[in-house]
Length: 457
Image (cartoon, rainbow, N blue to C red):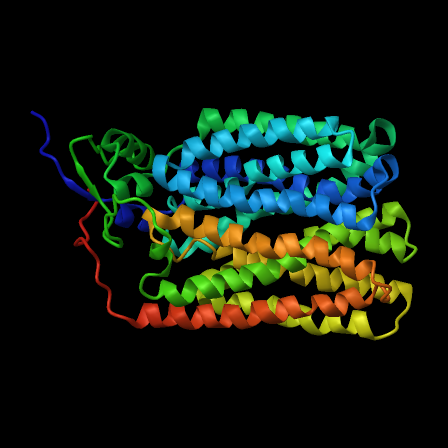
Protein backbone atom coordinates (compact mmCIF):
# COMPACT_ATOMS: atom_id res chain seq x y z
CA UNK A 1 0.00 0.00 0.00
CA UNK A 2 1.39 3.38 -1.03
CA UNK A 3 2.25 5.81 1.76
CA UNK A 4 0.09 8.95 1.91
CA UNK A 5 1.82 12.18 0.88
CA UNK A 6 3.62 14.00 3.69
CA UNK A 7 4.52 17.60 4.30
CA UNK A 8 8.32 17.71 4.58
CA UNK A 9 10.10 20.78 5.90
CA UNK A 10 13.28 20.96 3.81
CA UNK A 11 14.68 23.84 5.88
CA UNK A 12 14.25 21.99 9.19
CA UNK A 13 15.75 18.79 7.78
CA UNK A 14 18.87 20.57 6.51
CA UNK A 15 19.23 22.70 9.62
CA UNK A 16 18.94 19.74 11.96
CA UNK A 17 21.60 17.51 10.45
CA UNK A 18 25.38 17.41 10.42
CA UNK A 19 27.52 17.62 7.32
CA UNK A 20 27.82 14.27 5.53
CA UNK A 21 29.51 12.79 2.45
CA UNK A 22 27.04 14.59 0.16
CA UNK A 23 28.10 17.97 1.58
CA UNK A 24 31.79 17.16 1.47
CA UNK A 25 31.57 16.12 -2.18
CA UNK A 26 29.76 19.36 -3.04
CA UNK A 27 32.32 21.44 -1.12
CA UNK A 28 35.23 19.74 -2.91
CA UNK A 29 33.69 20.33 -6.34
CA UNK A 30 33.05 23.99 -5.52
CA UNK A 31 36.53 24.29 -4.00
CA UNK A 32 38.21 22.98 -7.16
CA UNK A 33 36.59 25.49 -9.49
CA UNK A 34 37.46 28.36 -7.14
CA UNK A 35 41.12 27.30 -7.31
CA UNK A 36 41.20 28.19 -10.99
CA UNK A 37 39.16 31.33 -10.46
CA UNK A 38 41.81 32.53 -8.01
CA UNK A 39 44.56 31.39 -10.36
CA UNK A 40 43.01 33.37 -13.24
CA UNK A 41 42.63 36.49 -11.13
CA UNK A 42 46.28 36.50 -10.06
CA UNK A 43 48.03 35.14 -13.13
CA UNK A 44 47.20 38.31 -15.08
CA UNK A 45 49.18 40.21 -12.44
CA UNK A 46 52.21 37.90 -12.58
CA UNK A 47 52.18 37.64 -16.37
CA UNK A 48 51.78 41.43 -16.71
CA UNK A 49 55.55 42.12 -16.65
CA UNK A 50 56.02 39.59 -19.48
CA UNK A 51 53.08 41.09 -21.43
CA UNK A 52 54.48 44.57 -20.88
CA UNK A 53 57.81 43.57 -22.40
CA UNK A 54 56.40 41.53 -25.30
CA UNK A 55 53.38 43.65 -26.31
CA UNK A 56 54.79 47.07 -25.40
CA UNK A 57 52.15 47.90 -22.76
CA UNK A 58 52.53 50.91 -20.46
CA UNK A 59 51.03 51.18 -16.96
CA UNK A 60 47.71 52.80 -17.98
CA UNK A 61 47.27 50.12 -20.68
CA UNK A 62 47.94 47.37 -18.12
CA UNK A 63 45.41 49.01 -15.80
CA UNK A 64 42.84 48.85 -18.61
CA UNK A 65 43.60 45.16 -19.19
CA UNK A 66 43.12 44.42 -15.50
CA UNK A 67 39.88 46.40 -15.41
CA UNK A 68 38.47 44.86 -18.59
CA UNK A 69 38.30 41.47 -16.90
CA UNK A 70 36.70 43.00 -13.82
CA UNK A 71 34.15 44.92 -15.90
CA UNK A 72 33.24 41.64 -17.58
CA UNK A 73 32.93 39.99 -14.16
CA UNK A 74 30.57 42.74 -13.03
CA UNK A 75 28.23 42.31 -16.01
CA UNK A 76 28.52 38.52 -15.86
CA UNK A 77 27.59 38.58 -12.19
CA UNK A 78 24.33 40.40 -12.93
CA UNK A 79 23.50 38.14 -15.88
CA UNK A 80 24.32 34.76 -14.33
CA UNK A 81 22.73 35.66 -10.98
CA UNK A 82 19.46 36.35 -12.79
CA UNK A 83 19.75 33.13 -14.79
CA UNK A 84 20.67 31.15 -11.67
CA UNK A 85 17.52 32.28 -9.87
CA UNK A 86 15.42 31.49 -12.97
CA UNK A 87 16.63 28.09 -14.22
CA UNK A 88 18.68 26.89 -11.25
CA UNK A 89 22.22 26.85 -9.89
CA UNK A 90 23.54 23.65 -11.46
CA UNK A 91 23.15 24.42 -15.17
CA UNK A 92 24.31 28.01 -14.81
CA UNK A 93 27.48 27.09 -12.89
CA UNK A 94 28.42 24.35 -15.37
CA UNK A 95 27.97 26.48 -18.50
CA UNK A 96 29.85 29.38 -16.92
CA UNK A 97 32.73 27.04 -15.98
CA UNK A 98 33.06 25.65 -19.51
CA UNK A 99 32.99 29.16 -21.02
CA UNK A 100 35.57 30.32 -18.47
CA UNK A 101 37.95 27.49 -19.37
CA UNK A 102 37.64 27.99 -23.13
CA UNK A 103 38.16 31.77 -22.94
CA UNK A 104 41.14 31.52 -20.57
CA UNK A 105 42.83 29.13 -23.00
CA UNK A 106 41.97 31.42 -25.93
CA UNK A 107 43.64 34.37 -24.19
CA UNK A 108 46.98 32.73 -25.02
CA UNK A 109 46.28 33.64 -28.66
CA UNK A 110 46.03 37.38 -27.94
CA UNK A 111 48.75 39.09 -29.94
CA UNK A 112 47.80 42.71 -29.37
CA UNK A 113 46.56 45.10 -26.71
CA UNK A 114 43.09 45.21 -28.29
CA UNK A 115 42.73 41.42 -28.46
CA UNK A 116 43.86 41.14 -24.86
CA UNK A 117 41.21 43.65 -23.76
CA UNK A 118 38.41 41.78 -25.53
CA UNK A 119 39.40 38.32 -24.32
CA UNK A 120 39.87 39.47 -20.73
CA UNK A 121 36.41 41.07 -20.80
CA UNK A 122 34.76 37.90 -22.14
CA UNK A 123 36.69 35.70 -19.71
CA UNK A 124 35.63 37.92 -16.83
CA UNK A 125 31.99 37.76 -17.97
CA UNK A 126 32.06 33.96 -17.73
CA UNK A 127 33.73 33.96 -14.32
CA UNK A 128 31.50 36.70 -12.90
CA UNK A 129 28.43 34.66 -12.04
CA UNK A 130 30.07 31.40 -11.10
CA UNK A 131 31.36 32.04 -7.59
CA UNK A 132 28.18 33.63 -6.12
CA UNK A 133 26.17 30.70 -7.46
CA UNK A 134 28.61 28.18 -5.98
CA UNK A 135 28.31 29.94 -2.63
CA UNK A 136 24.51 30.00 -2.87
CA UNK A 137 24.38 26.29 -3.73
CA UNK A 138 26.50 25.31 -0.73
CA UNK A 139 24.72 27.69 1.65
CA UNK A 140 21.44 26.00 0.73
CA UNK A 141 22.72 22.56 1.75
CA UNK A 142 24.22 23.33 5.16
CA UNK A 143 22.79 24.29 8.57
CA UNK A 144 22.48 28.00 9.27
CA UNK A 145 25.17 27.76 11.96
CA UNK A 146 27.78 26.60 9.40
CA UNK A 147 27.04 28.82 6.41
CA UNK A 148 29.88 31.32 6.83
CA UNK A 149 32.28 28.49 7.64
CA UNK A 150 31.47 26.56 4.48
CA UNK A 151 31.76 29.66 2.26
CA UNK A 152 35.15 30.41 3.81
CA UNK A 153 36.38 26.84 3.29
CA UNK A 154 35.36 27.02 -0.37
CA UNK A 155 37.17 30.33 -0.73
CA UNK A 156 40.32 28.64 0.56
CA UNK A 157 40.46 27.14 -2.91
CA UNK A 158 40.46 30.66 -4.32
CA UNK A 159 43.39 31.58 -2.11
CA UNK A 160 45.29 28.45 -3.10
CA UNK A 161 44.78 29.45 -6.73
CA UNK A 162 46.08 32.98 -6.11
CA UNK A 163 49.06 31.58 -4.19
CA UNK A 164 49.90 29.15 -7.02
CA UNK A 165 49.77 31.83 -9.71
CA UNK A 166 53.16 33.28 -8.82
CA UNK A 167 55.16 30.02 -8.63
CA UNK A 168 53.44 28.59 -11.73
CA UNK A 169 54.25 31.77 -13.69
CA UNK A 170 57.87 31.64 -12.53
CA UNK A 171 57.94 27.97 -13.60
CA UNK A 172 56.22 28.24 -17.00
CA UNK A 173 56.71 31.79 -18.32
CA UNK A 174 60.52 31.73 -18.83
CA UNK A 175 60.21 28.61 -21.01
CA UNK A 176 56.73 28.88 -22.59
CA UNK A 177 56.01 32.59 -22.29
CA UNK A 178 53.03 34.18 -20.61
CA UNK A 179 50.84 32.27 -23.08
CA UNK A 180 51.77 28.95 -21.45
CA UNK A 181 50.42 30.13 -18.11
CA UNK A 182 47.01 30.87 -19.66
CA UNK A 183 46.90 27.48 -21.41
CA UNK A 184 47.66 25.78 -18.10
CA UNK A 185 44.87 27.69 -16.33
CA UNK A 186 42.34 27.17 -19.12
CA UNK A 187 42.84 23.42 -19.48
CA UNK A 188 42.70 22.93 -15.71
CA UNK A 189 39.40 24.83 -15.61
CA UNK A 190 37.92 22.64 -18.35
CA UNK A 191 38.79 19.51 -16.35
CA UNK A 192 37.00 21.00 -13.32
CA UNK A 193 34.00 21.94 -15.48
CA UNK A 194 33.69 18.30 -16.58
CA UNK A 195 33.74 17.20 -12.92
CA UNK A 196 30.98 19.71 -12.14
CA UNK A 197 28.86 18.34 -14.98
CA UNK A 198 29.27 14.82 -13.59
CA UNK A 199 28.65 15.50 -9.91
CA UNK A 200 27.02 18.86 -9.16
CA UNK A 201 23.48 18.69 -7.68
CA UNK A 202 20.70 21.24 -7.93
CA UNK A 203 19.69 23.21 -4.83
CA UNK A 204 16.66 21.64 -3.15
CA UNK A 205 16.00 24.83 -1.17
CA UNK A 206 15.82 26.70 -4.46
CA UNK A 207 13.48 24.10 -5.97
CA UNK A 208 11.26 24.09 -2.88
CA UNK A 209 11.08 27.89 -2.82
CA UNK A 210 9.91 27.85 -6.46
CA UNK A 211 7.64 24.77 -6.05
CA UNK A 212 9.52 22.91 -8.81
CA UNK A 213 10.75 19.39 -9.56
CA UNK A 214 9.43 17.47 -6.51
CA UNK A 215 10.95 14.23 -7.85
CA UNK A 216 14.42 15.85 -7.85
CA UNK A 217 13.89 17.17 -4.32
CA UNK A 218 12.78 13.75 -3.10
CA UNK A 219 15.73 11.95 -4.70
CA UNK A 220 18.23 14.45 -3.29
CA UNK A 221 16.72 14.33 0.19
CA UNK A 222 16.96 10.54 0.14
CA UNK A 223 20.67 10.87 -0.64
CA UNK A 224 21.06 13.20 2.33
CA UNK A 225 19.00 10.92 4.60
CA UNK A 226 18.44 7.39 3.20
CA UNK A 227 15.94 6.64 5.98
CA UNK A 228 13.65 9.49 4.97
CA UNK A 229 11.89 7.72 2.10
CA UNK A 230 10.66 10.94 0.46
CA UNK A 231 8.51 10.67 -2.66
CA UNK A 232 7.54 12.95 -5.52
CA UNK A 233 3.98 13.18 -4.12
CA UNK A 234 5.16 14.75 -0.85
CA UNK A 235 4.75 18.48 -0.27
CA UNK A 236 8.13 20.17 0.24
CA UNK A 237 8.12 23.45 2.18
CA UNK A 238 10.56 25.90 3.77
CA UNK A 239 9.41 26.87 7.24
CA UNK A 240 11.85 29.78 7.43
CA UNK A 241 10.91 31.45 4.12
CA UNK A 242 7.95 32.42 2.02
CA UNK A 243 7.42 30.48 -1.16
CA UNK A 244 8.19 32.78 -4.09
CA UNK A 245 7.53 31.55 -7.61
CA UNK A 246 7.56 35.06 -9.08
CA UNK A 247 10.42 36.44 -11.15
CA UNK A 248 13.22 38.41 -9.54
CA UNK A 249 13.06 42.20 -9.35
CA UNK A 250 15.73 44.46 -7.87
CA UNK A 251 13.13 45.78 -5.43
CA UNK A 252 13.27 42.45 -3.59
CA UNK A 253 16.87 43.19 -2.56
CA UNK A 254 15.60 46.18 -0.55
CA UNK A 255 12.51 44.65 1.05
CA UNK A 256 12.18 44.86 4.83
CA UNK A 257 15.50 45.18 6.64
CA UNK A 258 17.31 44.45 3.37
CA UNK A 259 16.88 48.16 2.61
CA UNK A 260 19.69 48.70 5.14
CA UNK A 261 21.60 45.45 4.78
CA UNK A 262 21.99 45.52 0.98
CA UNK A 263 23.52 49.04 0.69
CA UNK A 264 25.89 48.38 3.60
CA UNK A 265 26.92 45.06 2.09
CA UNK A 266 27.52 46.66 -1.30
CA UNK A 267 29.60 49.52 0.10
CA UNK A 268 31.68 47.14 2.23
CA UNK A 269 32.21 44.82 -0.70
CA UNK A 270 33.23 47.70 -3.00
CA UNK A 271 35.82 48.97 -0.52
CA UNK A 272 37.21 45.48 0.13
CA UNK A 273 37.36 44.57 -3.56
CA UNK A 274 39.12 47.84 -4.46
CA UNK A 275 41.82 47.06 -1.91
CA UNK A 276 42.19 43.40 -2.93
CA UNK A 277 42.41 44.06 -6.66
CA UNK A 278 44.78 46.98 -6.24
CA UNK A 279 47.01 44.70 -4.18
CA UNK A 280 46.61 41.74 -6.52
CA UNK A 281 47.05 43.51 -9.85
CA UNK A 282 49.74 46.03 -8.97
CA UNK A 283 51.54 44.24 -6.13
CA UNK A 284 54.19 42.45 -8.23
CA UNK A 285 54.93 45.59 -10.28
CA UNK A 286 55.07 47.81 -7.16
CA UNK A 287 57.64 45.49 -5.58
CA UNK A 288 59.67 45.45 -8.79
CA UNK A 289 59.61 49.25 -8.99
CA UNK A 290 60.84 49.35 -5.39
CA UNK A 291 63.89 47.39 -6.64
CA UNK A 292 62.95 43.94 -5.36
CA UNK A 293 63.72 41.05 -7.73
CA UNK A 294 60.88 39.75 -9.93
CA UNK A 295 60.95 36.34 -8.25
CA UNK A 296 60.85 38.00 -4.81
CA UNK A 297 57.86 40.12 -5.88
CA UNK A 298 56.00 37.02 -7.07
CA UNK A 299 56.67 34.98 -3.94
CA UNK A 300 55.87 37.84 -1.54
CA UNK A 301 52.54 38.49 -3.26
CA UNK A 302 51.68 34.78 -3.22
CA UNK A 303 52.65 34.40 0.43
CA UNK A 304 50.50 37.33 1.52
CA UNK A 305 47.58 35.84 -0.43
CA UNK A 306 47.96 32.53 1.38
CA UNK A 307 48.27 34.28 4.75
CA UNK A 308 45.04 36.13 3.96
CA UNK A 309 43.37 32.75 3.44
CA UNK A 310 44.70 31.44 6.75
CA UNK A 311 43.37 34.53 8.53
CA UNK A 312 40.03 34.06 6.78
CA UNK A 313 39.93 30.46 7.96
CA UNK A 314 40.60 31.57 11.54
CA UNK A 315 37.83 34.15 11.28
CA UNK A 316 35.06 31.85 10.04
CA UNK A 317 34.03 30.28 13.35
CA UNK A 318 33.85 33.71 14.97
CA UNK A 319 31.68 34.93 12.09
CA UNK A 320 29.27 32.02 12.52
CA UNK A 321 29.14 32.68 16.27
CA UNK A 322 29.23 36.48 16.51
CA UNK A 323 27.92 37.48 13.10
CA UNK A 324 29.15 40.40 10.96
CA UNK A 325 30.78 42.16 13.94
CA UNK A 326 33.65 39.66 13.67
CA UNK A 327 34.27 40.78 10.07
CA UNK A 328 35.31 44.24 11.34
CA UNK A 329 38.34 42.88 13.23
CA UNK A 330 40.81 42.47 10.35
CA UNK A 331 40.19 45.79 8.57
CA UNK A 332 40.64 47.56 11.91
CA UNK A 333 44.07 45.90 12.11
CA UNK A 334 44.99 46.63 8.48
CA UNK A 335 44.19 50.37 8.63
CA UNK A 336 47.03 51.58 10.91
CA UNK A 337 49.62 49.26 9.35
CA UNK A 338 48.89 50.55 5.84
CA UNK A 339 49.16 54.14 7.06
CA UNK A 340 52.53 53.39 8.66
CA UNK A 341 53.90 51.79 5.48
CA UNK A 342 52.79 54.72 3.36
CA UNK A 343 53.92 57.55 5.63
CA UNK A 344 56.81 56.34 7.82
CA UNK A 345 60.33 55.81 6.36
CA UNK A 346 61.59 52.28 6.99
CA UNK A 347 64.20 49.76 5.85
CA UNK A 348 63.46 47.38 2.94
CA UNK A 349 63.21 44.37 5.26
CA UNK A 350 60.76 46.16 7.56
CA UNK A 351 58.77 47.31 4.55
CA UNK A 352 58.47 43.74 3.24
CA UNK A 353 57.37 42.37 6.62
CA UNK A 354 54.77 45.08 7.23
CA UNK A 355 53.48 44.92 3.65
CA UNK A 356 52.90 41.16 4.06
CA UNK A 357 51.14 41.78 7.39
CA UNK A 358 48.90 44.54 6.03
CA UNK A 359 47.96 42.80 2.79
CA UNK A 360 47.30 39.58 4.71
CA UNK A 361 44.81 41.46 6.89
CA UNK A 362 43.26 42.97 3.74
CA UNK A 363 42.87 39.47 2.29
CA UNK A 364 41.47 38.07 5.53
CA UNK A 365 38.95 40.91 5.72
CA UNK A 366 37.86 40.15 2.16
CA UNK A 367 37.18 36.55 3.16
CA UNK A 368 35.03 37.88 5.97
CA UNK A 369 32.77 39.96 3.73
CA UNK A 370 32.60 37.13 1.17
CA UNK A 371 31.44 34.70 3.86
CA UNK A 372 28.31 36.75 4.61
CA UNK A 373 27.52 38.04 1.09
CA UNK A 374 24.61 35.66 0.47
CA UNK A 375 23.77 34.43 3.96
CA UNK A 376 21.03 36.90 4.85
CA UNK A 377 18.95 36.63 1.66
CA UNK A 378 16.07 34.13 1.21
CA UNK A 379 16.61 31.14 -1.09
CA UNK A 380 14.38 32.45 -3.88
CA UNK A 381 16.68 35.46 -4.41
CA UNK A 382 19.93 34.26 -2.82
CA UNK A 383 21.79 33.95 -6.14
CA UNK A 384 20.72 37.47 -7.06
CA UNK A 385 21.56 38.77 -3.58
CA UNK A 386 25.09 37.36 -3.70
CA UNK A 387 25.45 37.98 -7.43
CA UNK A 388 24.45 41.63 -7.24
CA UNK A 389 26.72 42.20 -4.25
CA UNK A 390 29.63 40.58 -6.10
CA UNK A 391 28.89 42.52 -9.30
CA UNK A 392 28.44 45.89 -7.62
CA UNK A 393 31.69 45.18 -5.78
CA UNK A 394 33.45 45.10 -9.13
CA UNK A 395 33.04 48.89 -9.18
CA UNK A 396 35.85 48.80 -6.65
CA UNK A 397 37.63 46.08 -8.59
CA UNK A 398 37.53 48.13 -11.79
CA UNK A 399 38.54 51.31 -10.00
CA UNK A 400 41.43 49.66 -8.14
CA UNK A 401 43.67 48.88 -11.15
CA UNK A 402 42.81 52.20 -12.87
CA UNK A 403 43.44 54.28 -9.76
CA UNK A 404 46.61 52.27 -9.19
CA UNK A 405 47.82 53.14 -12.69
CA UNK A 406 47.07 56.82 -12.08
CA UNK A 407 48.75 56.91 -8.67
CA UNK A 408 51.83 54.99 -9.82
CA UNK A 409 52.18 57.27 -12.87
CA UNK A 410 51.58 60.49 -10.91
CA UNK A 411 55.10 60.98 -9.65
CA UNK A 412 54.15 60.42 -6.01
CA UNK A 413 56.46 58.10 -4.05
CA UNK A 414 55.24 54.56 -4.72
CA UNK A 415 54.88 53.77 -1.01
CA UNK A 416 52.22 56.52 -0.70
CA UNK A 417 49.85 54.13 -2.46
CA UNK A 418 49.68 52.08 0.76
CA UNK A 419 48.48 55.11 2.75
CA UNK A 420 45.79 55.82 0.14
CA UNK A 421 44.76 52.18 0.27
CA UNK A 422 44.15 52.47 4.04
CA UNK A 423 40.81 54.19 3.36
CA UNK A 424 39.34 50.88 2.12
CA UNK A 425 39.63 48.79 5.32
CA UNK A 426 38.30 51.75 7.33
CA UNK A 427 35.13 51.83 5.22
CA UNK A 428 34.81 48.03 5.38
CA UNK A 429 35.03 48.02 9.19
CA UNK A 430 32.30 50.64 9.57
CA UNK A 431 29.99 48.81 7.17
CA UNK A 432 30.55 45.45 8.90
CA UNK A 433 29.53 47.01 12.21
CA UNK A 434 26.41 48.45 10.54
CA UNK A 435 25.49 45.06 9.06
CA UNK A 436 25.94 43.50 12.48
CA UNK A 437 23.48 45.97 14.01
CA UNK A 438 20.88 45.20 11.31
CA UNK A 439 21.27 41.44 11.80
CA UNK A 440 21.08 41.78 15.59
CA UNK A 441 17.78 43.66 15.23
CA UNK A 442 16.51 40.95 12.88
CA UNK A 443 17.38 38.24 15.39
CA UNK A 444 15.56 40.04 18.20
CA UNK A 445 12.39 40.57 16.13
CA UNK A 446 9.60 37.94 16.48
CA UNK A 447 9.79 35.22 13.81
CA UNK A 448 6.93 35.04 11.29
CA UNK A 449 7.45 31.92 9.18
CA UNK A 450 5.15 31.27 6.27
CA UNK A 451 4.76 27.58 7.18
CA UNK A 452 4.59 25.82 10.49
CA UNK A 453 7.68 23.67 11.00
CA UNK A 454 6.85 20.08 10.14
CA UNK A 455 9.13 17.17 11.08
CA UNK A 456 10.93 15.70 8.10
CA UNK A 457 10.07 12.18 9.02
